[in-house]
Image (cartoon, rainbow, N blue to C red):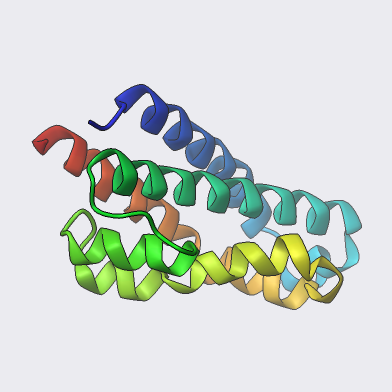
Length: 140
């Protein structure tokens, strides 16, 4: 059985990260790249949002006996396969699991340009994830 308190607490982490990241997304590319703090804050909040997203997915998979995902990509695939997320959206975001690993294990290779690109083009994915998970909770 899914523990809504666990999921809601992780949703709040995602929401707070989105709020901080939205402010940083307003910076120009030039200003972002020139500000080392903006880089560090962005990296931190993207990682927290990704960790929370994956925690939610793993919890739903395991607590509902959908299987035990072997890796982060499988978490997102399982959520799509079981209609917890739309299949299209699960496919769209399945790279998030790998990106979490990049932030954690290959942090020295993460560039300001790629983080700025995420700020400009991927923040809406976190909002959509929250929306679809909330709909799942309402209906189950």
